[in-house]
View (tube, rainbow, N blue to C red):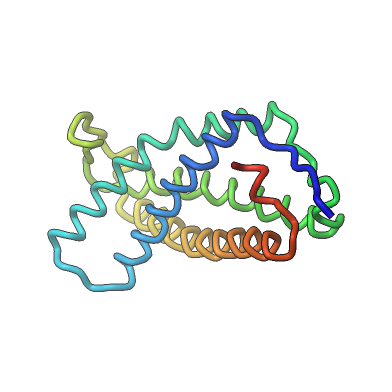
Length: 172
């Protein structure tokens, strides 16, 4: 049985794939740095790149949120039952909220001035070391939870693909 697939519009697809690349890189390289002892040079290089990349990503992400709120999502057209569709919705909303929390906590945890790709310097917003540490902890735990949801999300897409439900085609 061949199902027709309604796609997201072009802008939603671009936002999705740009977000996927940035979020996958930032989440898993950040978790890698937290879990594996690497030379200080590499840690500074990767951390600096992540801060620059995710700072540039902030307006892109908020553009994505605004676009998602203004546009109707395509239906699953029989690919998912009601429970699966509700679970997918919950995971997507949770990922959006976690990304927002990670962005806000990431900005607020900065203790020192940082550069964005060597072009712009941004001063820390908070001076209180305790508050910066609190936001750092929030940032790290939210990143762990996001990593789990990303794995769930990708696993669901792969599972649906292999069971003949072309969910991925909505984003291609």
